[in-house]
Length: 443
Image 1 (cartoon, rainbow, N blue to C red):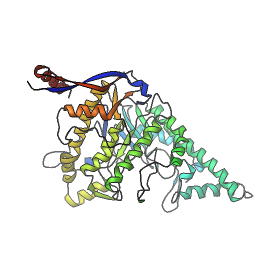
Image 2: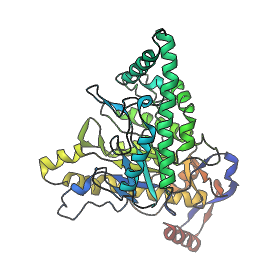
Image 3: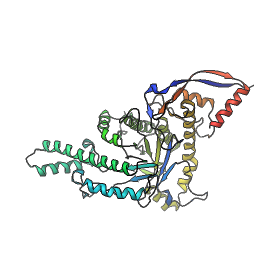
Image 4: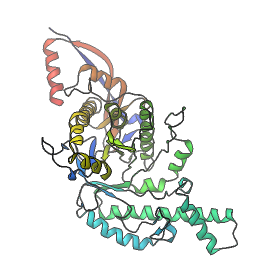
């Protein structure tokens, strides 16, 4: 009879690791895939509409689309957000110190009622990028917010020198920025408590120095400290939405380092409000490059973005696409056949593979009470079925790699135990077949 190598797993309480992840937004969906692109504009291909069946949440970022379970609020869609446009014109006061918070919140309530008419489960993402609440991060071209803030102080007190005026401006700007962002979150949570609320690109790692030969992807210590000082924001948020958009200026070896450190910083911050109750982390990714919207990510690029997200223990990924990508495609091909082909041949097969691999690892190591995460976060170990283009049940090689390279990180709302591979034994014919059937049923 054929021998079948089976590994004996010993139960070890995972809580000893003092590391947790947020429970799933949707029960029995440990890793959430969300699609946020205006693909309703696509003309159905010869084989039918785009296959988005793998995505638990599907929505469009277009302004006239409402009632979606993933909603993104841009600058002009939530209240009266103050900013300075590219021509230098002040909108809604320009800087938060000169804006009316009350008028903003009154308008924001109407906007929330319009875009999210019911209190259903989903994501609510605020995309405000014109200024940053940390004064020091408003470098060029955002320095206009510094200049306007300093001028406002000097206007009220002409006797102050530049240093004195700047010090006062820092306090006033950061206080007003905090109030705008914090009170907007409070309102959203009050009106739609079943939604997970947060700001796009928060936290940011600011590891954009990939033009340097010594690039390691690491977040600067100063930026980590600045993220720590935004504790008021993390305390008010119910989800984090970091971004891992890629530019063609990143070389293939740099991509994994760039992405890995950005996600890891978000996971670090997710524990900031409460180590025992971390915030869920939903990573924003794009299927194309930011500076070349007709170039789709390769299979290796997907490994270094989506694969990184799932191996580090993120709660999910939001795949975002803008009108620029679809306009280019529609104008040239009068359909979205390129996107349809990319979904069928590249993206969906990879999503199926890593989703199954993660689910099987969670079953083996966590009994589905947690998620598998890398033992060494800065390694290149991925949750793939072997080989990762093949769809099927896990092999014993897969199971062995899971236990050697990954560990169980429990959900914060359960008490779970981690199975850890310690030793193996051989099982003969009938027992081997029985074990295979058990694995097949679970997969």
